[in-house]
Structures are given as structure tokens and as C-alpha cells.
Image (tube, rainbow, N blue to C red; front, side, top):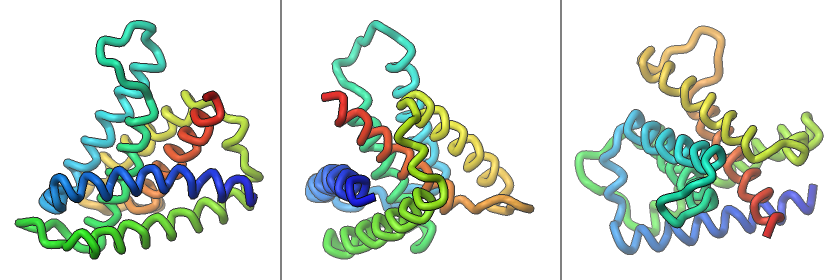
Length: 180
């Protein structure tokens, strides 16, 4: 598990560094996005990853790595939005946004540790394409929950699905880092 924690932390550091740099460029303009808009952004990224995995020809010279990083960061934005609600104008200082980001990463990391304990790190034997499919499945679930105004009868809420997508994307990034 120590290796997993190191790898997880290395990947989240890459995601956090990009998030922090984008905050310097754009501030927290993302605070105006509704959850459904964030879900759609994540869906676009996951669909692009799947397309990259299935098609041998690429017309844009980008790989899966940047898209998985985007999924992590958009999911973290969504988790923050769940707690704070949507703002009419950007309303967070970069310091406050980063503190919330780190808090959500910490909670999601703990969830990963708990699930890895119970599942025995089964993700290590999974293909990146399967992790992509699981993210897409979670996105379809989130869209359905959103269409149901957030109500579920027996299922996890939207926040748990975003956390699972973060962990699947991080697992994919760990696998992709091992290829290089």
C-alpha cells in the first residue's frame, strides 16, 4: 500500500500543480459552472479518451494523460461545488480554492485506501480502457441522478460517484506512468 500511496500522491501533485497554474491564469471562473456543466466537461474528456483508445489516427497531438488529469480536476471542482453551491461570480481566493481542493483530495485518497483494503488493489490488474469505461459508466449514473434532481432510492449520491471517477482516473494515470 505504501507504493500505491506514493504513486497516488505523485499523480495528485501533477493534477494540483496544473489546477494551481490555471487558477493563476483564470482565477476561479469555474465557480459559475453548475454541476451538470461540470459533468458534461468530464463526459467530453472521458469520451475523448475512449476515442483515443479505439482509433489509431489522431488529428490532435495530445494523449490520454492530459484528459485524465482534466477528469481529476473537474471532479474536484464538482465536489467543491456540491459543498459551496454555484456562485454568480468567481468568489474564492486562490488560497481558499487550493485549500478546498486539497481537502477534497485528502478525503478521496482516504476513500481509495479504504476500498483498496477491501478490494486488494484489484485496479492494478485492470486495463486503462476498463478504467475509462468505468468512468463513463459513473458519468451516465451521475447524469441520471442529476435528471432525478439529485434523488436516489438505493444508490450512492453524486459526490461518491465523482470520488470514484477521481480514483479511477488516478489509477489510469499510474498505469500510464508505468508505461513510460
